[in-house]
Length: 95
Length: 393
Image 1 (cartoon, rainbow over the protein chains, first blue to last red):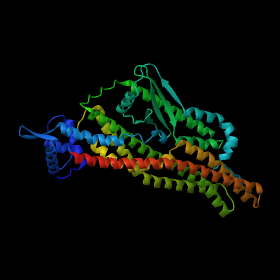
Image 2 (tube, each protein chain N blue to C red; image 1 turned 180 degrees about the vertical axis):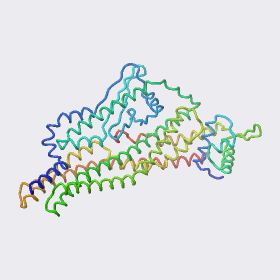
Image 3 (spheres, rainbow over the protein chains, first blue to last red; image 1 turned 90 degrees about the vertical axis):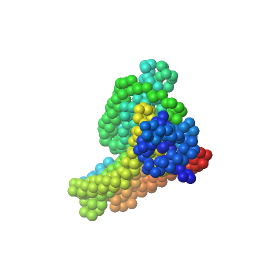
Image 4 (tube, chains in turn orange, brown; image 1 turned 90 degrees about the horizontal axis):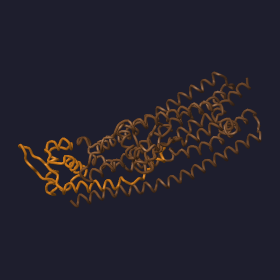
């Protein structure tokens, strides 16, 4: 995968951040509402970027967010927050 | 018979276009009502018993109790209904906080109250409406205070890092924008309904009365009732068409607010990890910004109470002068210079009103244009920065 979709990537990063620990791939797929093949491709890309690491427990594949992945999520959030944070709309004008 | 017809037409014209009449005769009788309206426009009370909560806590408490709020730079805005909003402001530090609750009229409420007021005889309607709203506001305040003081607030979940805080702040900002857009759409719909009721319901009755009169040469109960029925039917059709045209947009705006509020409540409680993705929703909001701005741009002028009032006071006297001048000319079947002067003064006043309105409109457009440029720039910035973030990974 050359270039990930920011929307899908952000959702995956957020869900892993919320888990605050290792998470089963199947659960991540359901929680993020993405196709399994798509999820696999994204996880491969994220693993190559060292955003996630894999673990195995009781025969299940577990995925864990790394500090680097958490930082990537924070960066995306900061950009979005920077754009939306300006109080350009004044509710007082609308009353 | 002719006198009866003339009386009916005069009564209809007076009821419908009584700007000057209201100003000349009704104003004196309605003086106390105007004072009441002015007083109520700043109807407020202050809580400074030392136990008042910080504004942030009040906002949280209200939201947790299911009250929809809009966070502004100055405080919290609680949309009451189409007639008023409640503003909460707080000053001082924790432990010695003074919290002020203020009710503000909406433009719709002002027009609704002033319309009957200007007819002189309709002042009673204004009194009833004023007292109804007054009681409604008081009841809302009582409910509000009960909710704030009823139960201890659950402690905020300690976020593990700054991501949680940033998520909460950003979703609150997005929610505020969505609320503004939602308010604009609702207000525009309400204003249009009132517009159709006034224009078709009242003015239409007058116009159709004149039309029927011109055909039959007389006007009685039958002609006047027919005019009322036709106007009522046209009003209903216009309102239904407006509703079908605007309802999808209103529902969409409501849906955005619901989604954002659900996510905001989740972020603040920190209880559930499942549900809609916050960052995904925020990125979607970023894509909606230009359309939301356009909505806000259009709604800005329509929702300005001052603009409503100014236009209202300028247009009604001119309408009264023109209508009465024309009616006098029609009834006398000859050129009476005083009637001609009335018409000319009315036209001049209407033109002056239009110039004033256009000037105000232009000023608002300039402000909105600058704002739109700023938001377009920000949306491009968002897209570019997100691409940079991806490339930098």
